[in-house]
Image (cartoon, rainbow, N blue to C red):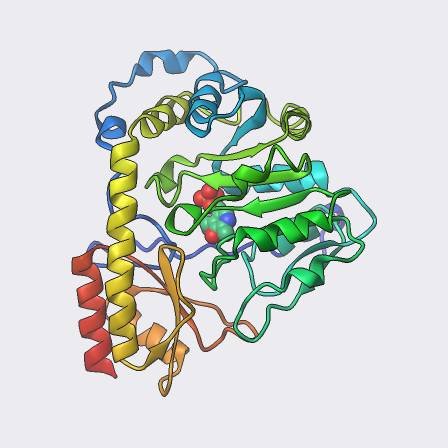
Length: 348
Ligand code: PMP
């Protein structure tokens, strides 16, 4: 071993879904939106000569646009480079206790990666046999709580009264609700931030806003939480958001009609596709997201995943305990999902 290697940090990184270079593919493996971003985003005239200047370190325009959109004050909004960046900053800012941070055993697989990277003790709480979060498991002494709602990859939405119960039993730690998929689901925990000064709600432009490649995420909560996040951000990198992210993010927020239209389209396709899956012998929890988490009664998930890939259909398979016979299939366009159904039908 070379001497300098002794001082290199050893980490097991998060492995994102494949981004294959295949022009014929149906790509349903990373929960992207099948529709383009808003025409306002696409048609925005960019003043690229301004790239000469640093971007606004306070991200003021986008913060204000989001604050207006959600009926908040700008002191209640923090913006980052995708919700991954916002969540990583939040782990760093809020999870500094010797007690373990709690999250579900089956959940977004970045949480344990950040915890390990930042030396945060953590404990996972098992989902019940229907893959539901058990709120009571979080009523114990801890260093913080984080979970997605709806959860991923299970696609299950937890009603707000249960989130309220978790918050009532966790008044002294920060509770992060990762709402990456909330626009496809039910009521947001955002309505609780005035009541709970320790609640941080995290959102992304990657799914419902169809801007995964732009990398925009944000957090909303009490102004003190947002101030703490900004202090850590400004100790790390002042210019996390580039000028194009700021300008195009604002354009997306302006176009609520298009936003709602593409959410409806995905939800409708999801309902149709789910029924087709039932017909083909799959079972799945009722999805509140832009993906379905399905298992087949007789054919293994791994086999189906590999067979689909040979047909240029990319879906996600997790070789992990409890979920290794499930497939996570992102909802694409009607035409794409029709092709997936045709493939499944002929294979099965
Ligand atoms: N949270 C959850 C639950 C997710 O599934 C994802 C997408 N991989 C993210 C956060 C991060 O999304 P992004 O960084 O693109 O905003």
